[in-house]
Length: 411
Image (cartoon, rainbow, N blue to C red):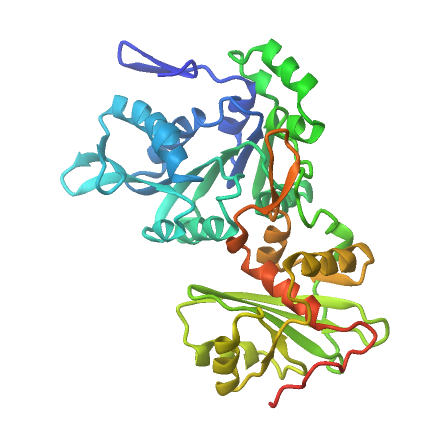
């Protein structure tokens, strides 16, 4: 048991602090606590979920955290400590908590880690709690998987996290709340709103940590973290979707993958050479012929896409299936990144605001930090950012000022 709740003589007593109470009072469909470390976020999750189960009745519910290590060391013990007080039983082989009301009637809490998103596709659920959903490992695809599982029941969500990046949690949740979307409720508070958090520790962190890290980790505020590679991508580089004129050349960037192949479609305004990325896809479990068919399905492309320099066989396979793919004009990764950054800074590259996957990656792609909190050359989880690789190939293939420089597709 925690300071949040106690059981005395069989009666549950909950004593939330003001931030926790605001989350319990919220009736928004998607409530997110974005708060400082050790602020009392995780401990609220079972209390909130138990209330949802009491209100919604028997069925399946989801409880997910960012990684398996967090699941095993923190989240699972918190869930078990609470629910086993009420007679729930944990089945380790299935990673579920169950409670039987009477024969053939029971509820089940499906416990998962989000860095294995396939595990979130296994149920139709009535509500979900998402622990540390702001971590890099909790990707947009996991959030979308949870929404699909809740869609039939229009289930509610409690998300609880410290902010770690400016990815989907910022763009798909926080920004929608700021814009007035009543489906969303954001509750932010500092670590010291938890009465158990030492004020002296909070002040020490304030004195010694970089400002961005203190604001994120102790005040629960979004800032641009050190090491963010595409920090020059701002709101000014986003545009609302519009109808692309038929006369504009179209291009495509491709990142081949055994599991997922990323594709980005872009158009270039001939009057000023501005580039607009307007469609995205991240497809898996498809043959080359199917991948090519999806690449050509929406419209007749006017110029060739690109893949990595080492992927000669994939280019041959795509050409055999009906779509020629050129080698990148720039092979070096860092040089390609520099080209994309320059296009953002010079306001020559724009992204449709509807491309949630690409925008999430732009807000998450970062370099690893050293012990002093300074960025290193190494890119964190580099192989996870397929859309950004496709963007780099795309921009390395285009020559501004000569929109017809690439080989045309045979339609």
